[in-house]
Image 1: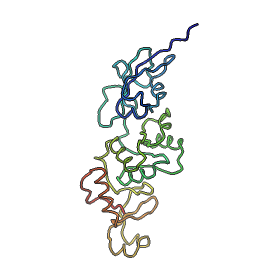
Image 2 (image 1 turned 90 degrees about the vertical axis):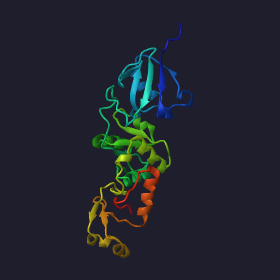
Image 3 (image 1 turned 180 degrees about the vertical axis):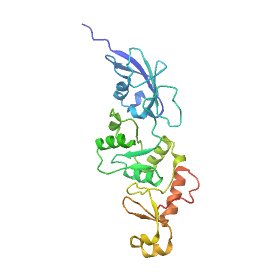
Length: 261
């Protein structure tokens, strides 16, 4: 008896989706062998690409959803999520984008969480989150998962997520801002970098017991986090942090923004 004839589909992944593929499959069409009629989502993730990274799938030139079943001879083109392009006339692979832009980060991304908070973004992070905590909170609070672990993004219930490529926090910040087109939504220094709370202005007399005497003399504006109680003012680090934001993101003049020190 001869060996069973396996079916074959031609796959081509575009742009940053190639980061998940071995070198011999990057930026080119290649054959994917399979049996039966697997869903295209299963085939894509078997090749190593998380479904959360994908916005558009074309099979033989026609837009399809994740549940579409592969057939022998199919030509499959897979495109990454692009927040700046409207693909509403074609089959969307998730209900809708999360325009609230709230994040939840895995345990490897604590420094990135602080930087996102510095820019004013809602970034949930705890150093003891496990994968199931992250998945549950992402669904309950409609958050985008940011992770260095590709595996969590392959979980079927995860709809919005991004695999952070770089290990450097500054580069990670650039990745996230570019990937989600966040430059126009930056509101620096409005969140607590420690616990993610939104800062509220307070009277100096209400925080005198929490600040150094010299600080009370030198500064008049104070802000406090309602979550952890930390007090902020425009101290020595404020100008440095403004310059950092301007340099790394090119976001223009930050005069008048909330304190960061």
